[in-house]
Image (cartoon, rainbow, N blue to C red; front, side, top):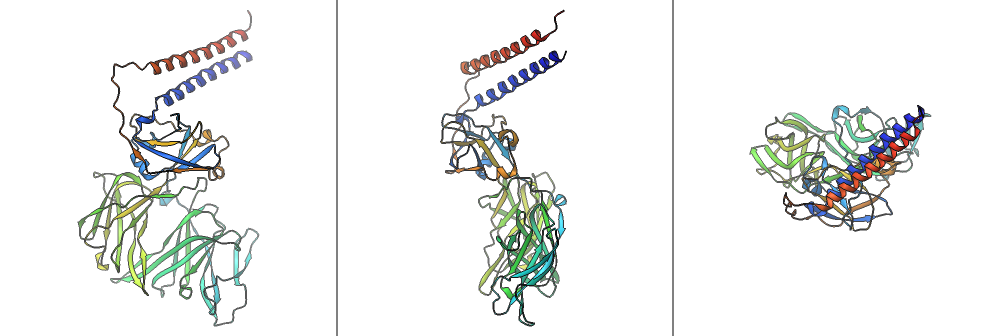
Length: 461
């Protein structure tokens, strides 16, 4: 009985394997490069055999299938390459953990305010900072508050955004550099931050959130520019997300023109519904100040939903422009945007400013087979989704391995070609019929072998 059971399992697995092989081969046989309207040559870097490419936004917009089901990679022989897609989407605000972190002042001397302060720290066994002191003695009256150290060692996930609050006597703009470290000795630049608190029309207008690059770090160091202007930080919170995803950069669109619905209300139409994560406004006129609320919706029948708010400005201070022209969005899919601004600050002008939107770049990983050059193709409404799970395409897949794969990048802008006319319905595709016949015979042969094994293993009566 045991032998019969094993033989039955062998039969089922054999038939299933044959059916999967049949379906996969048939799907590949139906793909022809000439049927894809958008074709982009790829330039490969590295030894492979797996290559990772950030899909250009233009390729995504040229797709004719939901979830990019018509994206393919072809080699020079016209063979389709096995591939997988990975898309990174921002978590809703409610699902992004927020953690209050400890802050410690960083002092330097008045004689060398531009030098990053050296520090001595006292930490617990887990690495949590409990005390920070200057590395060298600073006499009373000579200390200058240079910035702040944030202890993020208790957060094991990727740091997405930072929200700070500071003493109320410091109004105006706060600009600082952001650096990260795991050992308090070696620091990596994470860009610049800018927050603001302004008294405006008897109201207090604030911009307290700063975007972080979505990486892990045990400590953050904020150093103010100019050095003598650091305020007293009263609290700091960090939003984080899971690190169990590959690092996926943002991809930015070309400028999109808008329209004015009425004074202080601006509209923009996107090419299609997109999970927008950032919006950048072209604020051309100096001394523009516009507190605003951004709304979005999927189509003209849906009600407007608030997706972001903030303070947009271009102001001249000390002969330099101070600009805040971006809004962070939660990554919900929208195709229409509406900005309402408080015009008491001057607004954004009589015409809608152009905007550029950013979405997380969809990444395609393919297993290079055959000879190059390789072509990235999309824009075939008849194509069926053929992507594999990453764990299937890369047997020992891990996030760490994903981030070290060889790279491929577009060698030029997409080439848009006209799709060939469909063949007449009464024409006979002898190649496809032959392929069907071979595959059916192959599956039948495998089934016959399994059945023979089953009969041979049956007990004699």
